[in-house]
Image (cartoon, rainbow, N blue to C red):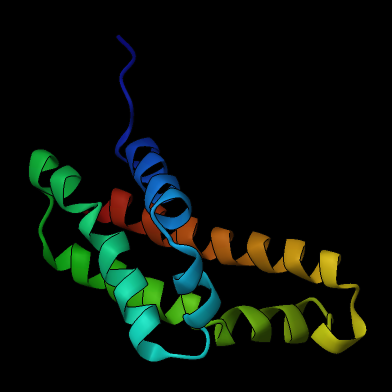
Length: 121
């Protein structure tokens, strides 16, 4: 049986909770309504509870996970990174390219947070 690192387990849970468990209405409304965003982040974070409990990771890290997910999915930081660091403007970029870049930056930020928690927890 293969052994997984904490980070690999976090990636699996992340993919399940951020893609499979995110409903269409959450994805559509989370950038316009903080309650939809908070609900999505709550459901996302709940998915990590069994992992944190089993691995005996402090639940304070769940708070960081929730807050970081909220900040990243708020979309302002991702848009800022794309515009200021990469030089892409949403209204001047092909929509398919913008979406691909946006998802890439969004997911990279999430993975960085998970790597930090896995390394420090």
